[in-house]
Image (cartoon, rainbow, N blue to C red; front, side):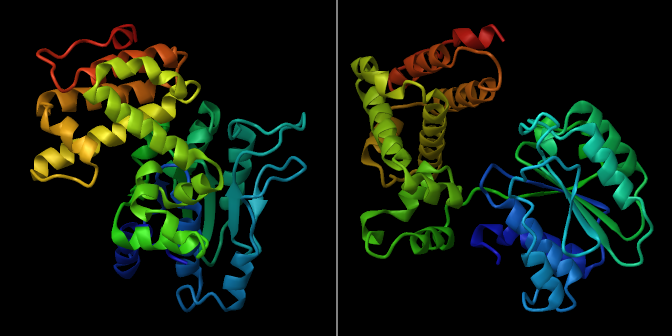
Length: 346
């Protein structure tokens, strides 16, 4: 099954297949829950199925029976598909019985050794997620990427390609799956909601709150994240229009990263509104953008992006968010854009 937001990436791969220009290594990237694994399974069926993914033949049924996403109760190095020439490598239980945080070098060695055997038909190896490989594992994989074998395709999936060494990136053809806010994706989201409650939600708002990641939008509905997100967004807009509201930010506690992403989306949408020179659907955001300068919005977006990236470090996220919010609270009347203290320390 191809999801509507996969179409652009799928069309790019279809063109490679038609022109017989498939590389020996693919890197499929996109944020978590964008559907990289589903996309990869669809690609594998296209490559292996005699009818280009009929979903009915013996081979397609064998692939449908694969379940490499599930966690095992014992330690393994690699997983084999029901199709004999397909293997998977992912984080697994270690010898102590706990789930590893990274893909280890012994796993990648087993992966490469399995792919090193001569095969008359196409053999495929999938690593998910490649940005979880430790340094030794990445170096071990590099040797195989540098000496590609015939009839072999290596597919790497990654949430964040920036965490992969440049030596690996340079040896892969990259395919990126973008977040989506289009009507076709919104229709898909609406179809996943129970018909009795479907009219209670705006699919576009759900996509907005999930940053254009449809599966995340549906998952958010199962808890209270969607409603939390709406309350964060409303307060952020109130802060921009009335700076004294910054004292009410206790609702952001323990959710600093998600609040920064919410602010990131608001600023991005505001910049689009200003570029297109017409009002958006959010009346409060329109008021904020009307009074804000392009230059300051772009600078604050850069700072917000940097704050989000710093979440991977030991930075104090509460202090960082507070500093970003101070600037946001004055965005409508800034004369000179200030430097954010924490950014100067990293």
